[in-house]
Amino acid sequence: MDRFVDLRSDTVTQPTPDMRRAMFAAEVGDDVFGEDPTINALQEKVARLLGKEAAIFVASGTMANQLSIKSHTQPGDEVIIEAGSHAMNYEGGAGAALSGIQFMPLPGNRGIFEAAQVEAAIRVDDVHLPPSRLIVIENTHNRGGGSVFPLSKIRPIRELATQKGLRMHMDGARLWNACVASGVSPGTYAEPFDSVSVCLSKALGCPVGSLVAGSKDFIKRVHRYRKMVGGGMRQAGYLAAAGIYALDHHIDRLEEDHRKAKKLAAGLANIKNILINPAEVETNILFFDVSRAEKTAHEVAASCREKGVRIHPTAKTRIRCVTHLDISFADMDKALTVIESVMKE
Ligand code: TLP
Image 1 (cartoon, rainbow, N blue to C red):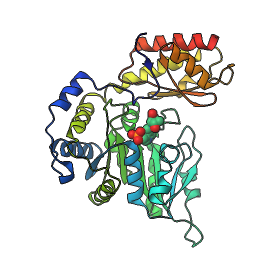
Image 2: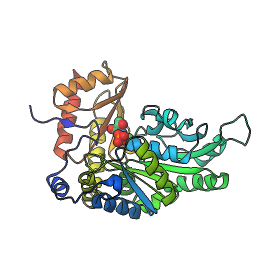
Image 3: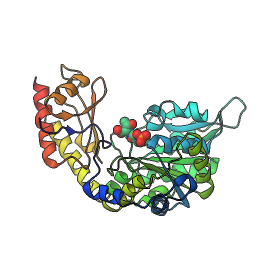
């Protein structure tokens, strides 16, 4: 069989030949001593890009989010977050286990919430209540279907946070997609936040890596906690080199991934028993619903897999597709043909 058309996630990409060359050529050192020049260069580059004083390289998006939450909070604090967010739902309960915080989930519209909802959720000062400490925004929002959090909705949330003394963290695992889709620069998006996490291993096609950016003092705290969880890496400049390469070469091309997702959505909308609103597809993630079909999402995905197309069932009737670097426009045609034939079976 030909290779799979793998639409399960944008994490499945292979490093390109040029990225591998950049990794091979990297100058490295022991980063626990702060002596890896390539990691240092990546950290400085990302801090600059996000307009923050400092940034730190970590192993994963989960580590970036959870060390940020830990560095902003004390046990018993409350973190205001969207109900479908990654940091609350898909990070192994780390908020409770590592930081001892509790989440206050807000229902969003495709992951997007309003300042008025935050205002209603902030606790008054009362010994019975957990102190509201941090607001987390996910941009783009994964479970919201790759939705872009508009800057116009972030700014009033920031005003409120400043007024009430709360901090703000952005889970920007796919911030690059939000920037390309909206035309807002990474620095402008990051400006209202005390900390921002970004990933290199999703849309940008790197094998490993994420960063947290923020003030020097904040990054110092993250650094201490990174060591505590065993995240101090040594000659990891080989990974950082992939990140530098990707930031230079793989951001502008995300526009192509967004077009592929739109093409896929438009095709899916024409398949009998598939429910999707193509107008909602803003970036590289889309969800569709198969509740009208005889099969469950898992059965649809299993049949597609037999025909060389991998898609990701996320609930009984819901399926996710994500476009990325290793998916061509022709692959979209193949995926549509296979999904249509499976839906007819
Ligand atoms: N998301 C992954 C998997 O967890 C499902 C994916 O395939 O989409 N924030 C957001 C918004 C994410 O989507 C992810 C990963 C993370 C954080 C965590 O990153 P990693 O997997 O590097 O820990």
